Image 1 (cartoon, rainbow, N blue to C red):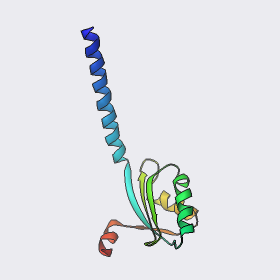
Image 2: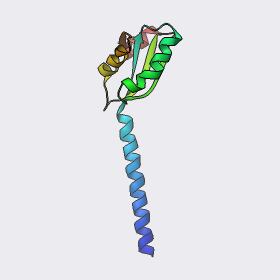
Image 3: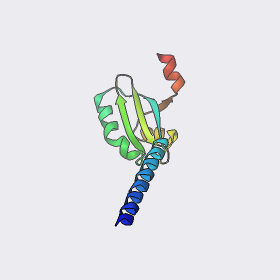
Image 4: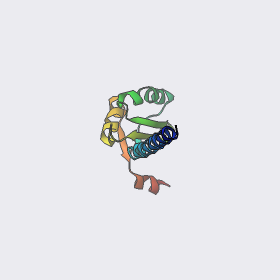
Length: 109
């Protein structure tokens, strides 16, 4: 009985370690990008909100469309898409998109 309990505890600990390691690897698969997009109304925002997650083939983990600043921020899975693919997905919806590089964001402040 004691041997069985020890084996069970060992297996449980191994499972926890594997799950934790996999979760850390998932974080490394994510990146963020911001695009400048010519959107000027809530209808544009609604269209992007509804269709962007699906047209990007499951790569989009989170995103925010901001009409006031005419930007789209996207957190995405780097195993499923890159910046060019996301830009193409936005353009497929009818909007011209241009990546805002991190150093460009800093200079705007």
